[in-house]
Image (tube, rainbow, N blue to C red; front, side):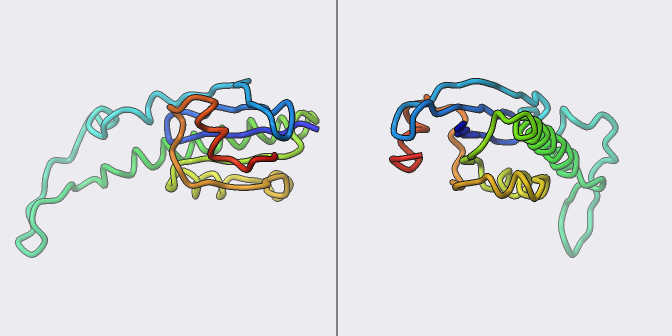
Length: 143
């Protein structure tokens, strides 16, 4: 039976497999979204400028944060499609998700009902840059 662990944020997703229920984990796949690491100004080329509303103060006119959200949403969809392909191929039978809180919500939005049924646990922490050993310590003793 294949148990996978997904450690993800809006720019990186690392997928690990557990060989044994109480053993270590090993990284088997990595997905990246370089756009998720960019600053908002790097994502938008033609900004509408700054507006000045005497009641609200200075604010961005074009909803600059929307570009970052769109990129993160697309990446969450890609991650879920990858997991769904593995599920359909019989590679994945149980899944633990460790993800940045905001990104965890995006992942939930893109999960199929069948994929959702395989999720054994969720942890709302960003551990994508941690070692496999550190990620394993945040999971239940027996997967």
